Length: 100
Image (tube, rainbow, N blue to C red; front, side, top):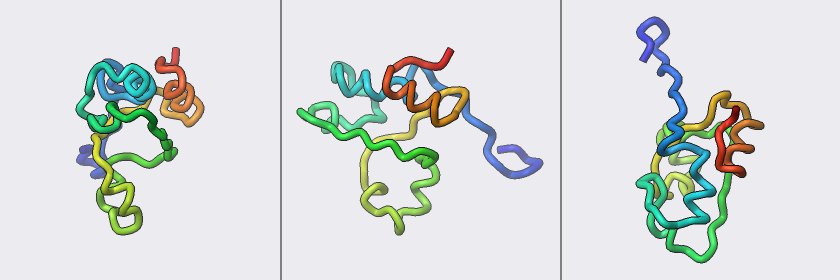
């Protein structure tokens, strides 16, 4: 938290662990079980990946009343890529690679 303006500091991408770059590879391979992806998802025969641009895990919790179905889903927070633009994030989600 930045004491000057009381806003959280930006998070650095966690390219080795919970990051958007690992979404599709984890779903396709299903060999390891990251704690941020529920086991039931990895064991499924088919999965629908829904991307909500700009919606963060921490933003969802306080808004459970307006998005109850989303709020009930299991999982955990992940980081995005840097730069955190839509184009970079969507490319990394679909390719499994960080921007260069």
